[in-house]
Length: 94
Image (spheres, one colour):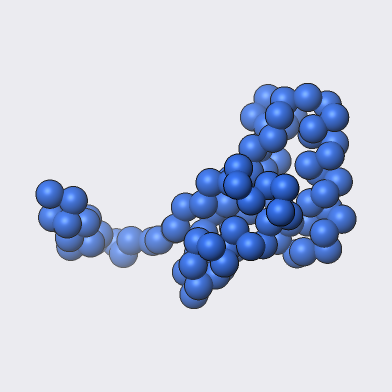
């Protein structure tokens, strides 16, 4: 399984913050009930890290109302000497 970072924005209003938080908490999903929020710092987004087989599977963890707004990024780690992996990625981009 791959690891994904899901970023879910919402409008910067009190009502939208409350609604988003309540929807996430009420879903019963472990991922959603443990989301990290940036609202108190003026960044009206939630972040969740999940393991899934694909980006679309990761998107499926979200409540339907937030799926289309979410950004999903595949995460990876590099070894102490990541040179080979970095070079390989840049060669593919050319």
